[in-house]
Structures are given as structure tokens and as C-alpha cells.
Amino acid sequence: EVQLVQSGAVMKKPGESLKISCKGSDYGFTSYWIGWVRRVPGKDLEWMGIIYPGDSDARYSPSFRGRVTFSVDNSITTAFLQWSSLEASDTAIYYCVRRGITISGVAEYFYDYWGQGTVVTVSS
Amino acid sequence: QSALTQPASVSGSPGQSITISCTGTSSDVGGYNFISWYQQHPGKAPKLLIYDVDTRPSGVSSRFSGSKSGNTASLTLSGLQTEDEADYYCSSYTDINNLEVVFGGGTKLTVL
Image 1 (cartoon, chains in turn yellow, cyan):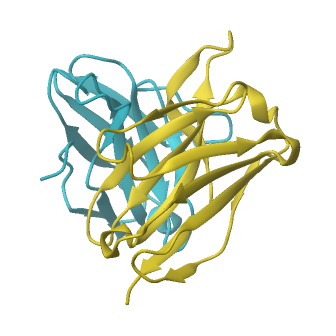
Image 2 (cartoon, rainbow over the protein chains, first blue to last red):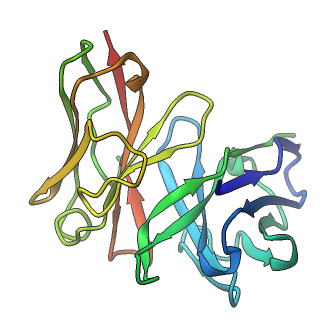
Image 3 (cartoon, rainbow over the protein chains, first blue to last red):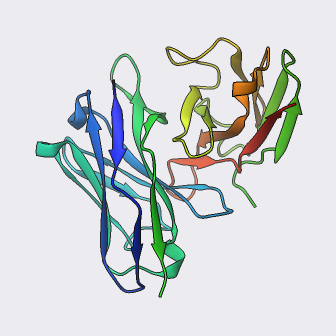
């Protein structure tokens, strides 16, 4: 069964760094884009960006470019989302998602599997 | 202001049908057939229900169906069951702001 399993909830202080993870299993990890979606309490889901594990090609939403970094470690089929300096406004639930593909292997614009979410709390 | 507009809540009785709307613009819902719908129960990860406007993934009940007219997409649930009580989100590809997709604000379905 395809699964995306994310790292656990974390509490950090403003200015600290953080790296959260998303481990994919039971599918060809390098063949599917992995995206990141944020939900700030009381607000909408926001698309942060996406990375292709096959070649680490990454695309960022303008709202997040320069603030976060996506990476992958294919040897452990895991994607990462990291911050170098957290802010209180980064407090949110972060989901990793697998981008669906067509039968012919063309990437689509829906997410067929979601991680369980990682709660990030940034507070002094 | 959500990128895609959904009603905050809808309700229905077991066995009834309900429809949830999702209104966007010609830059997203109206311009492309990359509409998807997700169901989320409290404390759980969202689950894909519909993609490409009206396609159900394997394993999703045929009680869920999707459609689109102009700038508005719709999700219809027929034969409501108590386990359908959840939050529902729409999503669409968008050609603005270098984003890939935008989401609706979500609709809370209550099964009375």
C-alpha cells in the first residue's frame, strides 16, 4: 500500500532552523513528484511547491521561494522540507503529497496520496 | 478571501443527495479541466475523491461524482451516509502567480 509517513510534531523558537521529513513507501519514489501543502490555522490550504525526486528539480510558490528548501534522499525514499530561520507565521500543519500521473506517465494536477501532516509550532 | 469559493457548510439527512460548489475564474476552474476534490475527516489526512473534474480513483465510491459548468465545479454525494460527515476541499490547476494549484476554503458536511 502506498504511504507517505511524515515526521512528528515539533515546537521551535523564532530564528531556529528545522527540517521535517516525508517517507514514501510501496511505489517508485523517484518517478512521482512530491509536493508540500500548508494549512495555517483558520486559513486555506496553500500550495508551497513541488520536487521531482528523479532529478531534484524543484519549483516553489512565490510566497515560499527563498523561505524554504525542498530536498530528497532517494536512498531512503524520503523528501524533506526545511527552514533556516523560522518565524511565528510558519506555525501551521504541513502536508507532503504525491502528485498523480496518467496511465501514460504524464504528471497531473491532483494529489493522490497525502501524508498525515506535521504540526509545526513556532513560539518564543 | 479564498482562491476558490466554497460554501462553509452544507447538511443533509441519510439517504439524501447534496452538492458542494466550487467557484473560481477563467484562470483556474473555468480554463482547465484539472479540478480535484478531497475529503478530510478530523485528524486524518485528506483523501482524493475526484480528479480531472469527474474521474474517480479506484476504490472511491460511485456515490461521489463531479462536474463543471463555466467557472464553477461541483461535487455531488448521493445516498448520504453518516461516515460522509467530513470536510471537503476543491482544488484546481491555475495559470497565475507561478502556482500549480489553488484550493477552496473547504466545506463542512453535516449528516443530520
